[in-house]
Image 1 (spheres, rainbow, N blue to C red):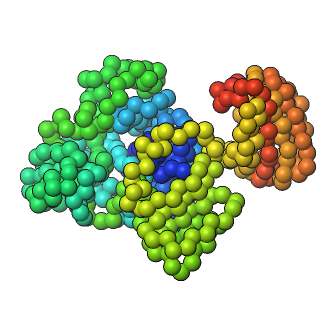
Image 2: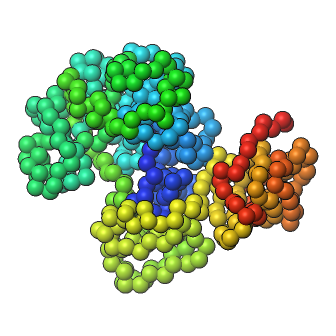
Image 3: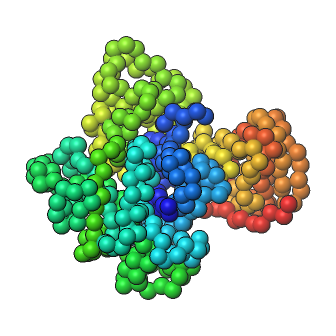
Length: 437
């Protein structure tokens, strides 16, 4: 089975744990044998469990590539979006990637689904059924329609011609108000969960009607010029030969704090104390200081280097316009080599704690407008500064002046404090070079 996992979005509704670099699907909240898994890890591992031979490709903006490699490994297939252009361009690019880079036949079927729903194994068996229905070719598109559990205003609705497990789609309805949702449910409508299957040739042909491109490389080069449009608007709602597979199993969209906490197996994560007067309260603490909650009811508390949220659970759904007004300085991010956390920011300096995973290293790079100082806290590794390699361990200090090329290599897990000094400190002040090793 060929699967495209859509991993877009900045996840502002889950601030302060999510930001422009660390989207909601990378937040680790699901208990696992090794600690905690994120949404993308949970989804990826569930697919492998149900279908070990599944070919999984993640469609993601370039800002997420490092986090994907960090959490899923270097071998994961990624269709990298140069910038965000909504779901239609993302799906077309990923489909072209499957054909031109992965060598998948245009007659093969691909199943597309979001990376962040909370589901169980039954969902993945349904994905396989979806692919088999699409392979028959009785319809150009096959959707998975979720049996609604309440009159939601968050989803679009699918009206069908009958109540069979596989039905012909009669009509799509936009996100309604509560009264409209009740009316659609009374008519037997299904939630549109953004899950569908098709043969590669179908989507590539549809793309050619709207975008002039030769192959994956050509489409990638033109990507920033493409219109922002959803796959639903560009393709689904215009298609006449379309079927839907009913799904009544567990499926929950974890897009808000309210829904996310419903999926948590524990009330607290991190250094948290709650007394016995708290009710329906969830706390996630990523800081190195304790959080004490007393007498809290129906509340979510979340603390990270980005900030602290204390909210009534129902009100937490309305967080986005407030987050839009905040300073967007990224304070934590996962990279392919490990992660970093900003400890202090002042006018002409920034202090960062860096953790490099064993066997990994940073890009060999330089900066024009800042000096850097590395102080090793723990672990062992090597630095290369302007071509000169030296061993480092706890207590060692390495200084890099602006313009010099440098990298750090972790022979064991390596913890480092980095101090950046300069009148203009910017993530854009970076030049990458090939490292000869």
